[in-house]
Image 1: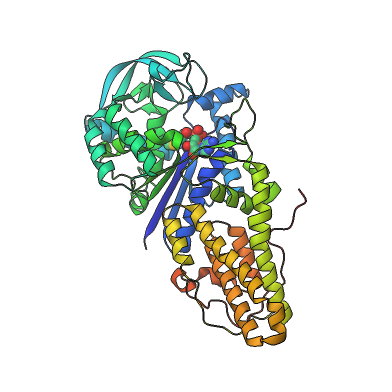
Image 2: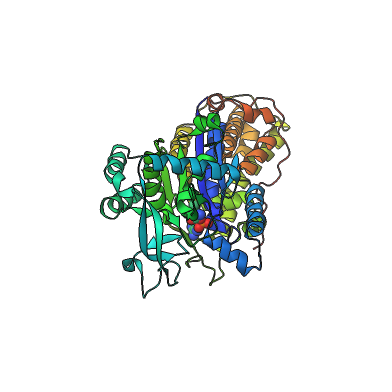
Length: 499
Ligand code: ME8
């Protein structure tokens, strides 16, 4: 069986997830559900990045003496929140776990044995917010432009990774594999960074106490990014379950936000090259979104809680909004008002209404039974949808489905089944069969995107649970809705709201 391995970043636990974190995980979930539906052996990995100074500071701020206790509590919350929001992760890796430490030590030794780790002296600036060494030229008014904080000045003995030794190989890889870094605009950004700036980097810290000790030198801990990136390997067994590791690696898609692209497209592949491990097939960096036009920030207090948004409109409406409104790969804006508009128009009106009309007419004119099958075709919609899903164009996948829904609404208006009921029974049956069959196809295609809605549609169409266990290729064929099957009473998919 072909596999599909998809990852999200592992998140810092200095706070609870906001809508931006949910966004990346949602995209990973949609992909995972899609490839499961197509019969692949899927593994979706997510988790928490725990060996960070940020977490230590957050623990102190909240009055925890025991950093691990704070991190355990917070990681548990991230796990539960993602699970409750319907993210179907297969693995959840925490970087303070023993299995992770074992894999990191193994990885370090491999890189060391190739001669790519050397002892040096680091003198310069460190931004704890970025968890990165930065240069004077990165600063605005002496501050990190992202975190608006003065960086720490550091002078310490550190282990360095010979990153610059991989410049040529990495450029060759980027050029030979256009699919490696997506979207294209990001590839160009990374390419010029690798060509012009990629220098050796310090991969240990002498003054930090929290983290994984350097193998053979307990006076140093491993730099948090070097440790964190390895989660993509340890999360599937590197270091403790070679069989499982071999089954899933290399990753098919690694999803990240554009803020962490250099770590994923320069440092990470070079680390893998050094350790003699194949590179992931694709790293996809999506854009960042603002909230009502403002950057998501603690000081503005505008971070949207994904659970609150889901409670208000339902998880599927939130999924729809994020996947449809913001083009995957580009920057966008999140607004509750826009979410409300999408709910009323695309979901309640175009999808909900169509489903309700079709089911009620079937109840009225055919006593709730699917009329005799008629020939037909779904046209290119399913191909369009598959292509969009394979390219991570979630908005385009939804568009393909919505074109079918809108066309179905038009078909009702044009055919006027209430008139056909008096004049042409045969035509009425053909029209309704076509509409029911299109709803079945829509339910299928919606499964990875709006899973709850897809399930409701399946039940309303009188299709058993086994329907969704069918072979994907067979489900794509016209005529899957069984003639004479009993459809259920129509319940609104997206009840009208007063706001
Ligand atoms: O960077 N819009 O973790 P993190 C879209 N631990 N996505 C957003 C977003 C926004 N406004 N804000 C955050 C780290 N994200 C490291 C990663 S991986 C080995 C280590 C999402 O908790 C986006 O995916 O700061 C971004 O890359 C990620 O959250 C950063 O999460």
